[in-house]
Amino acid sequence: MDFAKLRAEMVADLRKRGIKDTAVLQAMNTVPREAFVQEDHLEYAYYNGALPLPAQQTISQPYVVALMLSALQLQPQFNVLEIGTGSGYAAALLGHIVRQVHTVERQEKLVAYAESRLGQLGYANIFVHFGDGTLGWPEAAPYDAIVIAAGGPVVPVSLRDQLGINGRLVMPVGSYKKQKLILVTRKANGKFSQKTLTPVRFVPLIGSEGWEDDDP
Image (tube, rainbow, N blue to C red; front, side, top):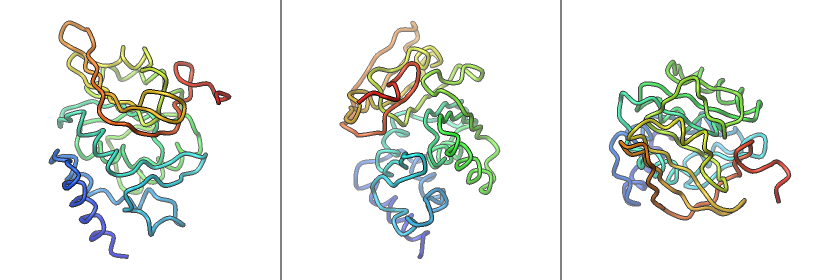
């Protein structure tokens, strides 16, 4: 399969859908999504939809990933936190754009899955951590941007606290199976503003400040 051609077609489609952030589009035209997709789904690597991963998780559809990263207004000097590493694809995109990425994953299988792929591609500015993502990664805070790739009932307080001044956070918030993507900005006075972007559907954010494992 001509993955380079499929990648270029994906980026062209993202432009048509309204994605304008040059850095995000360049990253998506560079990072090989096929390297993060399971082998039996390779033919769908550039399909604009979610694809299954180990541990009953998913790799998000390209449009939603692009929308979330664009909302963060990423800059080269940024220190970024990602919650929900999954395959490592979004972390790779971030790694092309910003100085440093810390990404937290609660599924050990996916930590190994992402580390293997990111390592093979030579990323040296991405650090994958095993832990409760709802608690963030305070050791490397504050963050210029935080992206949460799972839906929770509210934005965890720990994640808000780790967001730097003028920092931006994007997260799906709502019920267990249906959410709205929201953008939270921390103002110079330390207070937060919130804006709703679009309806989405993500896997649940499990953890001490998210949903419990046995939530319906």
